[in-house]
Length: 303
Image 1 (spheres, rainbow, N blue to C red):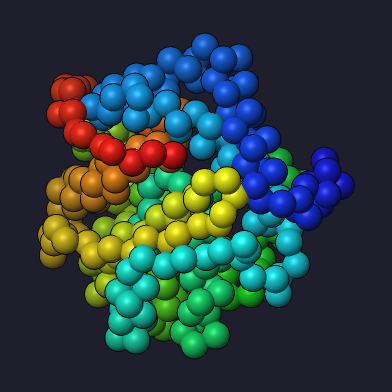
Image 2: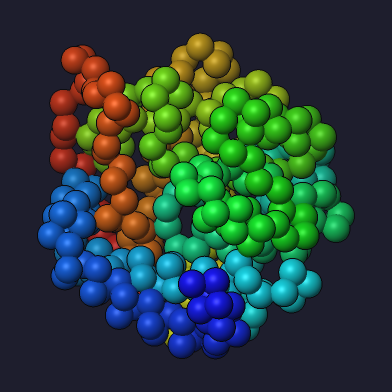
């Protein structure tokens, strides 16, 4: 498998994305449970089937591009093209030296955002620390850790030690990145609406901002058509977070609304098949909010 990945890492990005698109559709038709979850999640968000359908191929492209992102030489920049939209927002936040919390959903190429920041800002402002969940298989975990060890990219496991690592990075004025729509471990989240349906949501994203005074920003990596590269979009976090870290549910709800805003910008590249509404092993609380369909939103983007 490693030899195959190394061979694929040298293939043109357009070819990887073409193969990935086929892989995405094959997975969609081969797995009734995945297909059902994909459809239900998009419907819950009020996304029309025509707008969500390109996300089937996008999910496969996300997997197929991993050899390119993980195994190319560490000194080799992202090719063929890396564009920025909102670069000045991130530059200003880093220059303030208060720390930056970058939030992105499971949308587009979230792997490329950390590498783009490291490539663009690492030499001047230090590494970006990215939260991740270690693989259960020890051999796979070691391989993934080595693949993600790139210049100016640090990884923090989703453990208490990893949280402390991120806090230290923020207090040094560096950037950290995490996916707040990732279902957290039991005891590290609260039940709040996500597209109108209760979802177990991490409290860490808001707590990092509240406890360190860091600047929160929204970011996502758009995958361009036909392997043309990527565009990293950076935008302001417009809805203020509650000041008190004790208001965990309210803070988590604010984070979820920000993720919803980003996802509606390009539902064609969101992972609708992600098991966002799963519960921790203990199960949902008896007072969980009832599900309500989210309002439909028009979207004119094309994949």
